[in-house]
Length: 289
Image 1 (cartoon, helix red, strand yellow):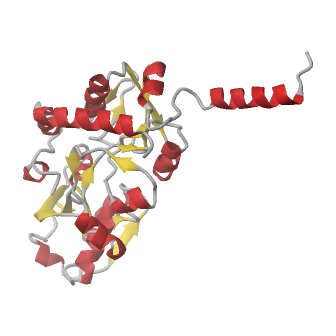
Image 2 (image 1 turned 90 degrees about the vertical axis):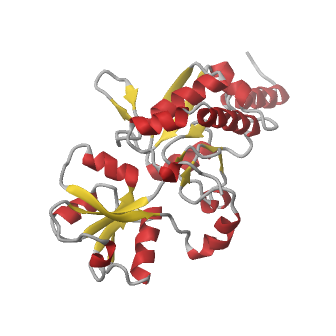
Image 3 (image 1 turned 180 degrees about the vertical axis):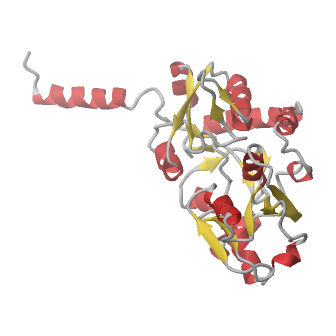
């Protein structure tokens, strides 16, 4: 059948509209598309990393964030969830492109991610803190013992900022930054560094399969990079808080998520979940300033 040029343009526009899918945001409304699909697509860059989320051989998912996802999805009325596993660096670009509806992947809420990355975050559900991690049989008993000693962290992470802050203060020696969260522990075990500066959840994951680690000193809290210090000082959340990332145009989805996170807190479910994975402590009580 022959189609006129004008009709062709109309057909093209119609196909473009259809191709955008039911998930496209219109005037701040993303929930109708998600409800129509009956499924919440979740971008995740840490699949397999305990205690966050992992998949068993039978295909079932488990972990701290799987439990939180189940609660949130039920509360906002979405019957199914689908994980889309991707590289960490593509989580925000993929969210903005509409490849997934949310990012629920142990992502800290920062001004840099919101302003430069162009996303927004729900109210937080977890608080990171860093620990000074040494080998169980090492001679180091307190943080002062690490003065001048090399330590390891992960390149581009908030943990690395904490480690370099310690270096600048003269409390540790050189900081070696590695590409992933396993390499610092390899460096510790082969004697390349004397301690690791990483968060308590990563430590818990490492200790689930190893008994050769211990911590020294008190928890260390995240510090902002110098260029973001003023903006973070004005923020209403404590730096280190973890939230659910959403496209800024999805105002209805963000509101629904915040309502679910509030219920997670008011019912005591958040504490229950964190206790289940050995992550509840005083630092988790207050996530906002």
